[in-house]
Image 1 (tube, rainbow, N blue to C red):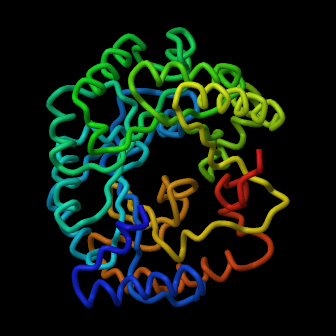
Image 2 (cartoon, helix red, strand yellow; image 1 turned 90 degrees about the vertical axis):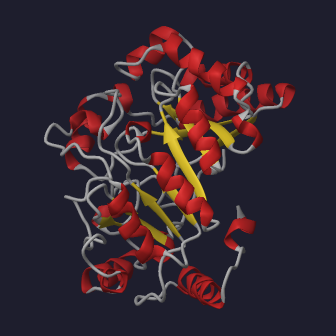
Amino acid sequence: MIKDYLKIRSPQELLKLAQGAYNYFCEPTHVLGGPIYVQIEPTTFCNLSCIMCSHSHHSDLRKKNLSREEFDTLFDKLYPGIKKISFVGIGEPLLNKDLSYFIEKSSKFKIHTHTTTNGLLIDENNLRALKEAGLKNLNISIDAPEKELYETIRRGGNFQRLCDNLLLLQKTNIQNRCEVVVWFVGTVENISFFPDMVGFVKKFGIKKVVMQVEQSWGQEYWKAIHAQNERSKLADFSLIHKKLEEAKERGKHCGVQVHYVNIPDKSSKRACKWPWKGFYISVDGLVTPCCIHGTDPRTLHFGNLLVEELEDILNNIKYKNFRKGLRLEVPPRFCQDCTSYYHPLQL
């Protein structure tokens, strides 16, 4: 990944990279240049209604796909300088038929590309398209290694179809060009099954599995759901630690890497660098702080990159005040309860 950031094609790119380094390490209120990393939401359509996803509670969410023309507009404002784009958001990326176009265009300019899917819409055609487009990282969200629990969590999912698609993924040898990683959202129901995920992913030739815990997405209504329903609130870090250690031990014996992210140590200092490295762009072009608490631009956004210039957004009063607030000892209200604000627990 680091070598991708260091691929320089022009003096202008070198300048942008130097500005990005200054922003990241010095944390100025007024940033220079543009972001080195962005997440672009390709769609708000989804084929599932997962119990831990805010999409399931967005009854008024406008359903939309990002178009080629809109992506071209965003890309022209981000390049040069941008080094990585993740095509992720509140929807299922494979529901946007132009996803491979987004990836191919980015890859032509040596930009590292990544997307996350629930895996249920994988087929030979889109796998071939993603592979030929130059996708570098493919994350697959799977929260249980067995049918009943998987289909309870991933409402609308089909475990057998998932397994069939993972076999297809294995047969295409996409991992020769693209890193495939399984992501697991730990909840009260499934945490005990996490060690079994090691053997499960191994069957399909996948060599890495990552655990994260559930988010509140920065939404008061989602925090209320957590408060009312302890089903989804996993606070027992000793249990997480135990299951992680079991999984790591199994991984050593079968060649599967086991990692975790977004399990915060709230006694630590701020780790978040989002306002100085990049941002999240909604399917409507709205720029939000990040992918954790920023997936709903109605909560907070700094402008619309489809109609405004990048510099006007990056250094407007609202964005600069947000950076000032993040440098304070107490996290801004928007960032409270964010699992990425603090350094991770050492488990």
